[in-house]
Image (cartoon, rainbow, N blue to C red; front, side):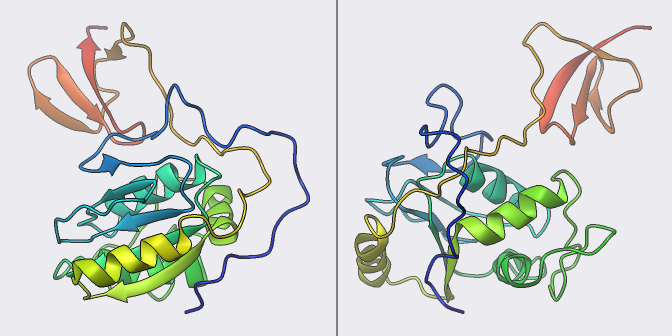
Length: 210
């Protein structure tokens, strides 16, 4: 797969590459480096840090994990390259899912076309977010590579390459206020008395009685 960024859009409605108050949009097991860097790094099932990347961290699932990667990438228009490296997560194959999503997109049911993972479905992102991901970044495929020197070299090569994507950041996270409470039964995963997980918002919230 080519590591050149996709063609640029002519839409230049915003000069702000990301919201400094909220980026990264989704919390997770990652490290934020230089938000102005042109490259983000996904280390799949491996754990190592890379200097010079906008954000770096693992991705171990082919559904929610991939969704979080996409959400954090498209909410920072400085990011023009996504380096996928490290050891693949067996069974889930999130690296394969990222490549397939970028190359093929999703079908009407949200399934990532061509992915070999167990449950490769995008359920919490609109199709427009997937399309934006495909346009904004070029994906650099180094799945299985864990050599720190090689990865660092690729980051240095791409960190200042190209310009920001000339459209506003795309925010796809459904946010709830800290004081908002979910009405009992509205969540989709119950975590114990008074607590539910709303996976569509990636939020654990307090449950209010009806």
